[in-house]
Length: 450
View 1 (cartoon, one colour):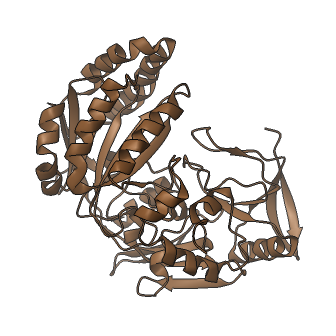
View 2 (view 1 turned 90 degrees about the vertical axis):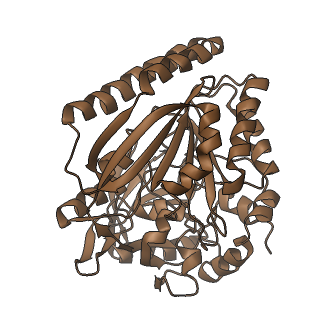
């Protein structure tokens, strides 16, 4: 892309920048050209960047792994990467607490915790994200006994919009705003997590008729530790996954992981998607073929992150809405009918997960146990129409968009379904009085609040 790494001196401190940098997110649906791309490796670096932005009347946005489908990180001003802030800062084995820098990727964090005999309490399907980015966007795993990833955070440090380093503990008034904040209150430099003893997870899965899955969904979701559903539209069966913490020794093999996660998931699945791109008419048949290959009984045990994480999927577009748990069955039946009646030629799995209610101001789970429904699609053709139809259904139920994924609903709707947004905006302005952390994405979300 024409980028070159340069050492840059600002107010006597050296840091690295990239010239001619073009930001492209993982899904390649978001692009921007920052004025300057910074790679700080200390808190002092970050404070200086903020002060320079204030002096030059520029905005600052932080980017982690770029594994967000929203435009949250996009900017044509200053972009700050935390990739050099990726170190383990402190470990307390008695309390099972660890402190890591904000740019630490989750996949790296798992490997840091493993030899310490520790693990995160719950994780999402993917661990490419940085810890700061994952908590800031409300990233979640699955299980009604578990909250969003931010619920594991005991304290954090951030540099606010005035260049000041602030530490917030979970008991502090502003913590519920800062932990899930879309990068609007400051640049998170450190996170202290409450971990647990290292554990193994048994994965069990089997295909079930779609209607039977829906019938049993609520009872099943409340009885399992980590339940998840995958359904390939246009097929009769859904895959019901349950993940349970067990003391058992590993019952898995490298060969099986390599074949299932590497060869089958990456090569075969991509090949089948390519067949569907040749003609939309092929997609129901392709999905049926995929389901016959992929939807099979599974039983294995391995270290937590090796089971709860899934292989990186093919590139795709992704929206996810948080529905009230008690409406989940009705919504799934209506979504099934919508796909059929509107002749949506879906080519990717639909995912159903569950998350405990919380009180984080920007969390989609604020005040309610939640059923997340992920609406995924590979390719560009028809995506806008499909997303619009899905969102129209979501709005009927007052569902809340995952702010780290794609959504097109108006800010008026977001304000009507997210009860904490007005309070968050008040706190945000106190931490960033000059709006240094704003971009088009945040301005759209908060535009209704004076």
